[in-house]
Length: 291
Image 1 (cartoon, rainbow, N blue to C red):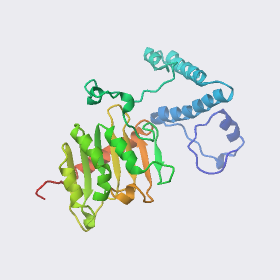
Image 2: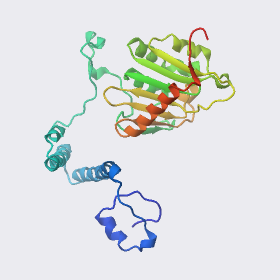
Image 3: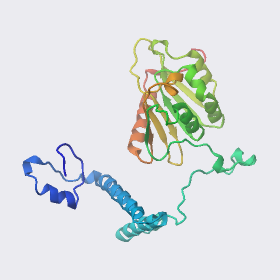
Image 4: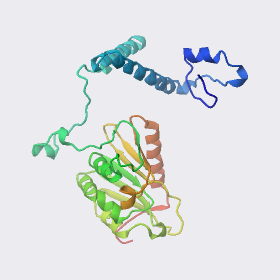
């Protein structure tokens, strides 16, 4: 049964039948935007496919049966589009996921470690999630530590930085930058909230660039974002209410959304572009040792 209110729903055969019984004045429909059709239909199809795969399990099938259905869909797309490249997108029958790769020259290999030893965040790097500080969730600072050591490049945007918060992730930042990772940080000196010690410790790190707004009375920057770029395509970003302070990263009632490139690519692109805009804003100046 359809409830009164707003929708943004692809009209399928079931909806067509229901809508036929509703007077025109009570309903509003519009053609699917041609420019957005691929995204709209893909999202709809994802829901249908997930429902179908769940149904396979409900009827006694296993993961191999789910893979079989998945590959049937891939084959149908290949036959319809006549593009041979789709054949390579079939899921391997072993039902495995690639979790990590090490470079041939990675120093961990020399001491007997393997790709399986790489520490990874507890939360998915492919699916977005929400942190609310609940007891069953990993703490923000523990996830940030794991994100840092597995990133290729990092941008941070915070209103203020306290040494109490920075020290929680300082070892990982030191390891990251000494291994060649690039770190960029934007912050402010608003009301003197940022600790000079924190900025000085960051300045000592190699491959690290810091920009500060020196307006101590007002600030336009209230955003908090931690962006972890990965060349694998599994970029993640934490956007929310947590500044770099002990309370915000451990016990505070802070809400932060973890956004992933895999399921929200446009949001990640907007986060990255906005950071770049701020980075080039004249309000934020490079921090140097003599300041």
